[in-house]
Length: 136
Image (cartoon, rainbow, N blue to C red):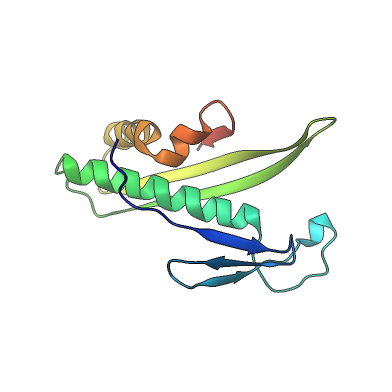
């Protein structure tokens, strides 16, 4: 196995803290969602970042596979919705609802590359069996 790259982020504080990325220098302000007792501060949250990470990784995997196979397509997008679930006496769990589309290809080709990305995307592989992922 060959390491391609490494990224590091550090979170200071909890739900109302901040995240600092040591590679890009970007800082993300965290704000506890109102649904969890937050007061409506401006900022992001771990679930939003999870959606962003998964959708971008899955889209990148689809793009890579399409380019490797020299498939002609217009564009693609992946939308990921992260749901935070509470399991009594166990804690929290994520569920993802994912919409992936490749414009300019037929349904059979779309299905092939969604399935291919499920086996190629590092996020998908890491979550297999741990997180319910529903593709719509």
